[in-house]
Image 1 (cartoon, rainbow, N blue to C red):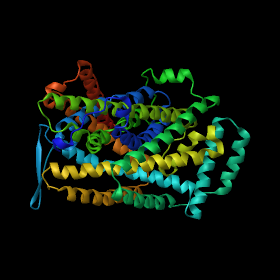
Image 2: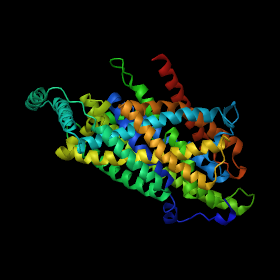
Image 3: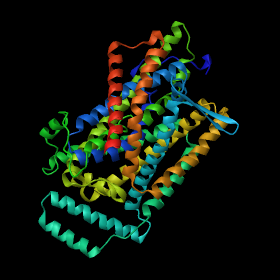
Image 4: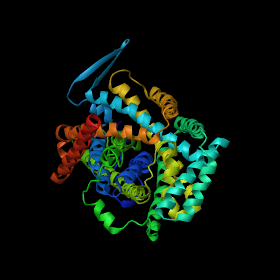
Length: 502
């Protein structure tokens, strides 16, 4: 970074909007795992009771996100580079002639990184399931799809009290016998992984940015239309009293040993901006050029004006993305509660995608599956692609900041391509050997929920120990940062408690 790269921040609304992008990349990686899978599962288990928790989960993390981005663009340090400077125990792990020198934060990130790869295995498995339903590759796959469709149709007919339809469907299901074992989802997951590798090898920031915006915008639009159209059906409409109950800080009952709060807390870790996205955001800000435009920290007025200007752009970027994924999250949650919760269907195992597609059947009828599958393939693939691109950057960065190896720009570029091959392969193998996408996603959600209080602590450390005195925020902002930290702390503490005593 040099002074020759500095650039004044835009001041017009048009100029600001033309310079946003990192937040929409995050939205592209959020909608697939957090919103489509985890949020609908929470709605299915908790019905409308946790609407308040879902909304808080989307909003409360943005303050930490912006503070991490601010530290990156004003100090020129990546997330892991900054986090490795936080006081605390350090660990020197020798690997031959090299030494991995990292603090406690980076070690925990390394554990979370493994969980994220498993989560992305669940995501690519979800894409495989969607494609296996729409384009089965084997005769067994087509037969299995038909069997599962009949089961779900019976559940919907029972909710609508359509006795004649229930009788007919059950007779057809008995004639089908047991569903055949099919591997079409795995075959498709492998094909999608290969396609992702090709895109990652040639992909640059602009491709990732445009790709995510297109896919997220289209599926979000369809989902919101579906939710509003659902209100014309008496059996499925979301009633005002249900919304009021969902916003009243109520807690659902524990039924059959199933505690929806555990699922909700894991979901809290990945909806909105999860721990993984919080750490990835500064990297996208740097690649977008915010830090380069601000330039190295100087004590003159020109640097301060540039810093405040580009921080304003970043605020628009972060809050704009928050509005998009919050609306999307609420829509998915209400659909999960209104349809899956009322029918008792839970999206899980190899039937996850077909179960989720039922959320669109009351409105779109016979076209529901096609519409949902198209959208699901789009957002799940977007999530997989963007998440792997982000984790590749973090993985390379930890090699550098730990002192394990110094990489030139050419070596860094080659490393991204190699990780673009290796990481997708590891992810898909997680699904091949454990084809339960919901569980894989929630495992990562649990690890990210535990990571959140650590990130909250880091954000407070940057604010009070590393923040330029000329950029100190308002007391209201500081109060929101502390509220964000306590929200993270409660989430992480409960997740640890639940796993130890459940």
